[in-house]
Length: 287
Image (tube, rainbow, N blue to C red; front, top):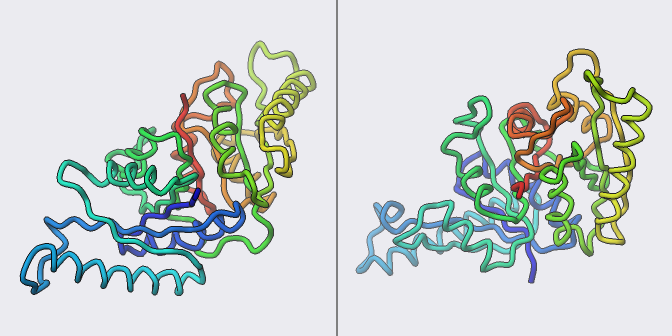
């Protein structure tokens, strides 16, 4: 059965992620599974047991109890599992394997934002996972509010009109099917040299959003919005402004893409959303 799979490492950042993962799972009509990965080479110290296998069973039982308590503290419901890291794996590879085994339609991760440097999340587990999966990844950044908005789940989906940015709509299909998530499709307009003027450019953006909307699952409620970038506002801050105004529960976008226009959704924009956003980013890897 398709699930939202949240990976918990015992940290406060993972704990802050849980309410948002649970909210997404509930709105998407999918069960939530919370997984913690056990490394037998490093996580069994201090456990007295006859064999390594016995020590692993003790650790798994303890961690399963902690995960249930974490869910309760987050006011969330879901299943829990503790899975062992295989000898040939690092943590991102294990996350990818487990996401596939559990039929994840979204993966959820918490991050403290360490390694944020210009256009990259250097060394980030989240980025390593995102670079190798077509499954949307919900990333709860360091400034995300601990409690999700109480209104219905509204997902702000960003597009700059390029194929790489538009991939987000197609990748979200399995997650959105059968749920109650409503989608607000957003494009930003910022005047630039050589464009056709504000009215024609805004109309072209709206027409493109309408085509994107037609690719969403039929039952998904959808709205279209073309918003002007204000004064010297950056693209990421414009997206965050709209998200706040529209009370979005998360912001969905492709992680990279290039457009000759200044209203683009690129890796740098995604980093800005993660650094400054008060709601999670739901990211997909561009083709």
